[in-house]
Image 1 (cartoon, helix red, strand yellow):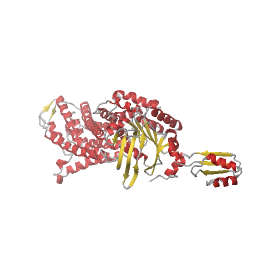
Image 2 (cartoon, chains in turn green, blue):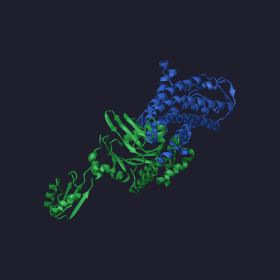
Image 3 (tube, chains in turn cyan, yellow):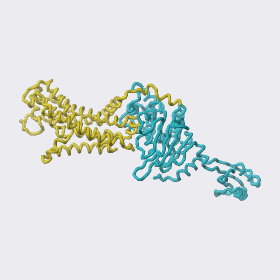
Image 4 (cartoon, helix red, strand yellow):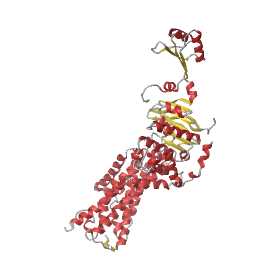
Length: 315
Length: 287
């Protein structure tokens, strides 16, 4: 792709707080028109990256291109075309939901005051908040605040949406609505950059992802590209346990036992060995196969392999 | 790409000055209960003074108490002057501290600052709008004291032509022009403090801290101004001309103190405005 095909492009983006690097040498490339997942555990530097993309924080080093302009230099021309939800919604509790949006819309000198009310109402409608538009925002639930934050990102036609954890605090119904919203916005041609620590969510919405871990970008590409980085597995259910074990070992695999005498699994760690060949070998050796299951590499395995397991917050 | 064509839509042709943000700022400021509570408290000062004087007005003038206090019984128009004199050292700086200290730190604390900047409001523009909002509050606060004073004074005491400090007498309309000038004078007096508050507000995300620091500085400056040993410092204190409005009550009006005060406040605005700009234009917004 040539320059200009990316909605977001960074080179060597780094943010250091004292000696600690919250973001370390990140090269993001988000093609226009994609729904791009920005995945990583809590504390992996996602939000700090987003703050730098939007010009809220200055990069320690590196370059950022957002749409057609370098950031933060061209913030004035670029940011009106970008809608953002950064680290959760923020509200004036003493104003109504509608007045909150009017306030944020007024901050953008490029928007027209004449169309403000119509645009605010359309944004509220789009996130299903019309019925609570005149209610003071301090009475909003977490999910309603989140919806208001998303509505703020939709106040004007945008070329790029940067949504940091958009489904945070939403119930399953709300999560589904946000997924549909993102899809319909994407169908309109908007590039959408969604950060999340939830793999399942990203997997459902995004065609491309980037994975952050401890401030570094550890993977970037289409979902399929990332999956292919892992290895497939086979799972055999058989009464002829010992024979199956011998056949799998003979193929150069490392059979894994599961405490049952009829189930055996193995990672297809031999280059070029296909699941169907494994099955044929079992049958040739007269192993009675009751069940045979081949699974592709799961993205979850891949994610865990990239970012490490457990609840420890990176840092 | 289809998304590209949406960029130049006519809805983006809005004005460059962005007065809408100023209107929005003023709207938000005056939609807060807190703002009205402060204005209400300021309005209570002349009411309290007038009522107390009225209730105990049988006593002879003792010559003690705030300036102009003893003139009230003869002419209700002096309630405004007395109330201003009482409000200037403490209540007015306190409320200005709240508003100016809240400008940036309040938005940062709510998290709304990041959305204003992403909109994008522009950092310099946001600072200017915030300062303008604080300045307007100074004027409204001062005017509240003056107008409430005039009303309650007229209700409780006889009202008539006022004898000025120069011995000349002006009619009621002339006196109101003086009062308006006085309100302007006090507003200008508070502009330096507002600039200091704005700067302090860019330093923190805790609005209460910025408010307290701003109000405390006003107290410190007045204490320093009361120490004769620091005479050399006095002309440089932003509080130096706070009570120097007497010249506006002469005929003809002596503009010297007004000009000196304006110049001093301009200096404070320049210095602390620059500091606020220096701090805020490069600040990482992490709240």
